[in-house]
Length: 368
Image (tube, rainbow, N blue to C red):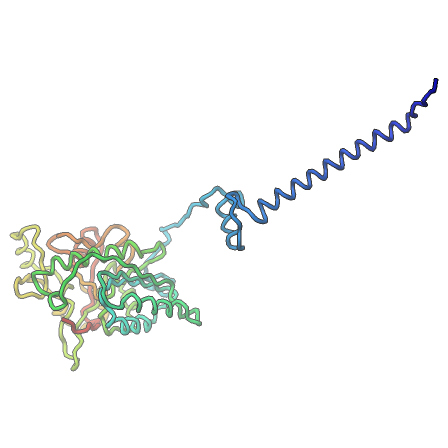
């Protein structure tokens, strides 16, 4: 019989120890390999949807959209304290934002002078936003606006850049021959479409930081560079200067006859009118017996104000609060008025003050 010697206890212990070590090392290597491939897929090449991230910006966007920094998808609520928003007499010193609103249609001929004048304003440009609503246009209005917006927003001097310029386009399919746009019979319909245009522009462009809204006609051709500060200093809810017609000899000719006061005669006359009848100023077909601002004395102080019951919108400065609280431009008949004059009636019914400055003269181009 051949006897085989049984391994010693020392050898057996060593063999068992090596097996344990090998299993341990193999486990570590497996873990590292698995981690490497997992990390490569999730962080270096593929997002959760399996799409390759091709740029740092995409990576940042992915981080935000998947709730980076322990945020829930969708981000955080936006909190704005509108109690801190004011429109004051010293708006320039208080750094209050102004938005200039101008509705347009086939306006290419007027735009060079329009931009020249607003660029001449002494109010800080970084506190000025400009917004346009272009409707039913067949000329190059939109392309000119794009070109000027690019120029005004990208100037080398940051102090000469405007805060924001927005161009909106909304067609109403309303066509009216140029030589018919001021005829008496078509005014209620035309003014109704203008009201809709203004309301579209207002609701699209008004931001939470705007303190003042300036309604400016594209064909106003002359006003002082300090006009914003001047009108703000009057410190009323709605204020308009006296808009005259531009003449070669500088003679006094009225233009904006929508700035007016009611009189005893005009109020009495309205008692017998059909509620749907729209009153219009400056037409011989129907005399309203109102006191037009263009007929008021102009020798008083430049900032001497008078209360008004109706306003136009050649150059109308409004505290943004007036619009925010609901005063807009009625496209329907409101107290025998539509559009801008209806806005004035509505603002007054809400308790806001509406005023004009008979001695503060600006000029409008002569058109058909």
